[in-house]
Image (cartoon, rainbow, N blue to C red; front, side, top):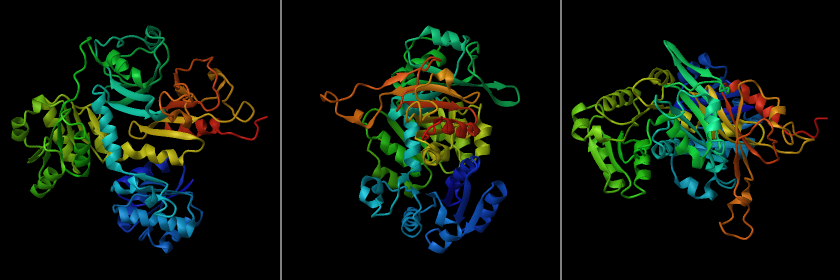
Length: 487
C-alpha cells in the first residue's frame, strides 16, 4: 500500500515505524528537514520537505496514486486542510486526521465529503483515556483490548505465585472451566539478563509465577480470568477509587474530565507545576477534583498528599524522565499501582520488569485505530502489542465454501502459520443486532465461541487472532481473502 504521512513528530514516527515494517511504500512530509533526514536514515522511507497543505508538496510526495493519507501534524487545522486538499485535488481514497478538538467529531457535517473530507478522526487523548479507563475498571490487568464491539477482550496479566491456576498447565486451565469462553493465547516469560521470551501455549505448557499471560475471553469472564492468574485468595479485588494524576497537560485534563463524569465514584488529585495552568485546570474540572501546584517528583508533596493511600498513580506529563522518576518514587512511597506515559521506545523497553507496573506509549495506544485502515480484507479491529512486535487482529470471514479458504471448514483444516492462535469466534454479530432490547425483530445475542479443532467457520464469523510476530499478518489476511473461486 502507498501511504503518505504528514508530520514527523512522535506520532508520525511511531506510525512510520509500524507501517514500514509491513513493507508499505511510505512517504513522510514535514517542514523540518533534519527530522526527515533522521527518519530516512533509520527507516526504508522517503522524506519530502514542505508544507503538507500545498498541492505541489503533496504532488511531490506522490499523492496522484496514493492509497492512504495519515495527517498527524501538530496543528488540527493543518491536518484537516491537508485531507480536504487530498480529496479535492488528488482524490486519495482514504484520509485519516489526528484532531485534538472534540467538536469535529460531534458534527459529522464538518468531516463529511462536503466538509473537510476526513474518513476517520484519531484523537490521541481520547485513545489514551479509553485505554486507561479499562485499566481502572480491571486493576489487575496490564492491558485490556476490546473486540467485537466490546463483547470480547484480550487481557494481559502478570501471574502471581499462589493464584489458583499458577503452577498448572494450559490444559488443566482449560479443563477446570470448560463452559467458560476463555483461551490462553500467549505467555511471555522472564529469563536472567534476557528480554521476555515468547512461550507457545501448548496443552503441556506450565504457567509460572511472573509470566505475562495474554488471554482472550468474553467480556463477562474477564474478572474470573484475572482472579485465577493474579489473586492469591478469594478476597474481592479492591476497586480503584483514589487516583493521582501527575501532569495537567492535554492527556491529564482529558482523563480528569472523564473521571469527573461519575460524581463521587473517584477521588482525583492532579499535580501541575505551572501556576497559570493550575488556574485553568481548576476552572474546567469538577469542584471535587483537587488541583495541586508542585513538582511531580517532590517527595514531600507526595507524602503530604498521602501517596501511600493512592490506588493508581498516573504520570502523564510530556517529559519521559519525569514520568519514570515520579512513578518509581510513588511506588517506593506506597502507591498501589503506577503507570508511566513514555514516548521513547528505548525507555519503555528499559522500564519493562521494573517497579513501574505499566509503561504506556501514547502512539501504541492509538496505533491500532490506524492499522485497521491499512489491513487487507474485512479487518474490524487491530491492537498493537509488546511495543509493536505482536498483534491481535479481528477479521470477518466472508463468502462461502467455494469463494473462501476458511468458510465451511474446520479449524483443523485451516492453513494457518505456526504460532498463530485463533483465540475466539464471535458469531451472530451484525448491524441488525443494534435493535433495541425487547423489540420483536431483535436478533439473538451473539455467541462468543472458543474454537476447537472440529469447530466449523461460518460466513460472517468475527475471528480473533493472536500473532506473536507482525510478519504473520499478511499470511492471515491472504487466508481470509475472498475470491471468485479457489477451484
